[in-house]
Length: 266
Image (cartoon, rainbow, N blue to C red; front, side, top):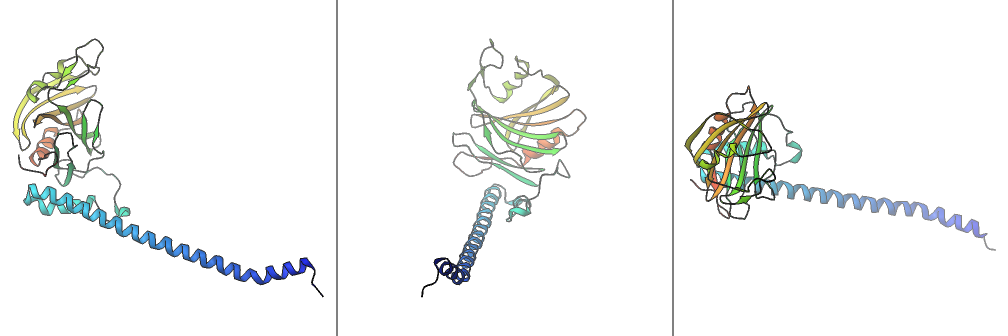
């Protein structure tokens, strides 16, 4: 005598149910073990990569100035923790004049040098370059409404398009000559405040002027290196005092990084 087809199917399904469920759970457990293993491997790789990157950065800075070794490594441990979730969100430095955080801008590969220096906090932008060859190296907020800006303007002698139609193109000149650029036609109204100053820094000879843009002041310090034009500026409200102190502190720790080379004394 044979069982009805429906009863036979039900019987087989009932007997196979526990076995099928066990197989599925075994597969899920296997996938979970693989996922955990991959997560552990990724974490180990990430920690190792961050450790190597931090050590290479520390050695590059310390090689130029061994006396800063302890401070540099302490600052790097704070700004580059090995575990990503321990990285802190942005907060303004307690002291805008402190020189505790290494900032390193590597060479671009087109001949222009990079630079390293100490600042009150980390740069909030990666190095960026415009179509005209102007590179924004660093932007360091040091207080509400106050920021340190480092820009490579390009190679001296480069011709740049005029800001206003009908005006002649602009030829990028040396630092001393750039002090008169504030007087050339521009889409932004700039009013000079105070005299032009000249000085010698760890980064080389520098020229400084301050001008007003709207309700804010900009103090720019221009310098050249290996045929490339740089400017270190502080953008601030009119009531903030100490822009020159910020730049002077940064420039006292400045080290050039030759294109394709290692940081060296200037």
